[in-house]
Length: 121
Image 1 (tube, one colour):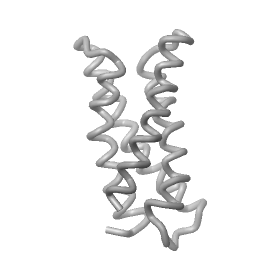
Image 2: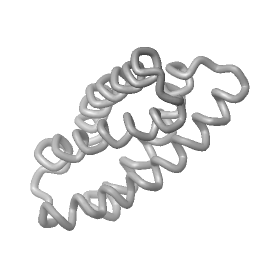
Image 3: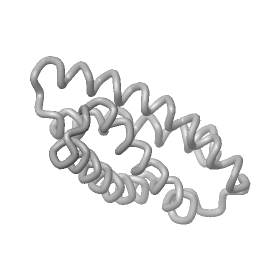
Image 4: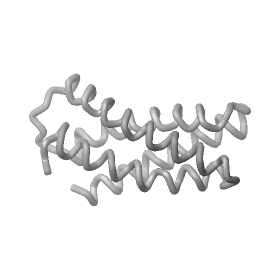
């Protein structure tokens, strides 16, 4: 399950990183709100793939599962934005900062979803 989550996480993270780059470098949007927006895009895609492949056989309904996923993502979003803002404030490149933060946030969200949402751990 962790291996499937890792594969999905890397894929959706790459998409989210692309969205972040487009917002910041191409659209000129501020970094922290852009990090939040890209996080939401990648996490919604992660739910779709997670429900069908990572947590196969879950008995939770789609709407309630997505609601739990959003709550768990909210925790991840707070962790992401706080750590991201701190790293950018000390001069770390925003793409590197977002990559480093994803390691902490991604693992935290995996555990929260596995335990509370899909009840597989």
